Amino acid sequence: MYNAKQRARSSCSMVTTAYEAVPGFFIHDNPNVTVSDPIPPSFGLLDSTSPDRWAKLFHQIAQLNSNAKKSHGADVQFKLFFLGRHGEGFHNVAEAKYGTPAWDAHWSELDGDGEIVWGPDAELTPLGISQAQTAHNAFLTEFSSGLRIPDATYVSPLSRALRTFEITFDGLFSGEHRREDEIESGEKGRGRIQKATVLEACREQYGVHTCDLRRSRTFIFSTFPHITALPPKLDEHSPFPLTENDELWTADERETNDHVAARVKTVLDVVFERERGDFISITAHSGMINGFLASIGRPSFSLGTGGVLPVVVKATRAHAC
Image 1 (cartoon, rainbow, N blue to C red):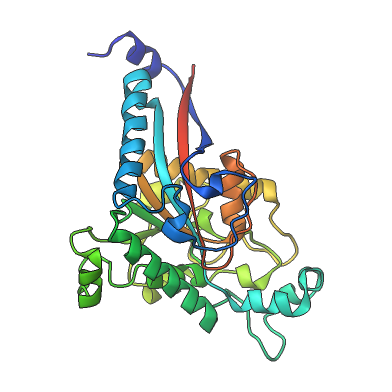
Image 2: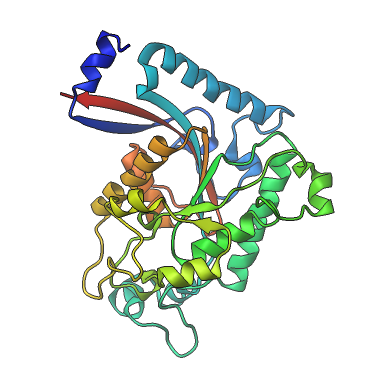
């Protein structure tokens, strides 16, 4: 039977969720601290040396959720997010070559310059591949100190993010053979990565720049084996369904920063609605990551290519009757 509070909620017609960052766990949480390394030791965990540092962190998050459940039921939840930026892409090289003003005004609208090809859907450079491997190694190092495999993984539909995701978690996917060196480094017994969910809403700021024009859904799922899509009914009713061809990108209009933040908020909605686990990995882009930060009330952060930004997020549901 419903109690009085549950009956009141069942008559409410709309539920909205607010998100906020919870500081005090990582060096990135302090806006006055400069973090120059895209992947600092222990991913920037304040307690970066204790042998049981990750067990302590996950215990703290579990305690936050336990206390919230006692006080607010299922209306307040906490999750740890690892926000990964793709490794260097050829569009990053081109922007550095010409400078941001010239890139935005002219070169970004082209597919290349006769020397570099960056569009459509820019690929990783050799350095970008190496940066993704560095992220892979960082995860292996921390697995040996108690970091868990993420409970769920999400990824942008753009190739540079998809390739970064696959390199980062190479050898850790469900059904893959474990390499001996990874077993010896502590990967054994840490669980396995299931297929990542591709979300259209995880993509980079879109429009005008050809590097952000994505490829077809058919190409994506025939090229990258360790991904899946939202269930059809959920995807169809999403404000950003993963259509066969890119229906968001246009050659004459760039998505605004405010729209990116609103779009990325739908990613948080999906994650907190679907996932019971408290550790989520998202592999995406600088624009998407800063949209994520804006939606949780954090200032923007300049994360280097191949970097990982951890953040604890509190979700609070409000019932409007």
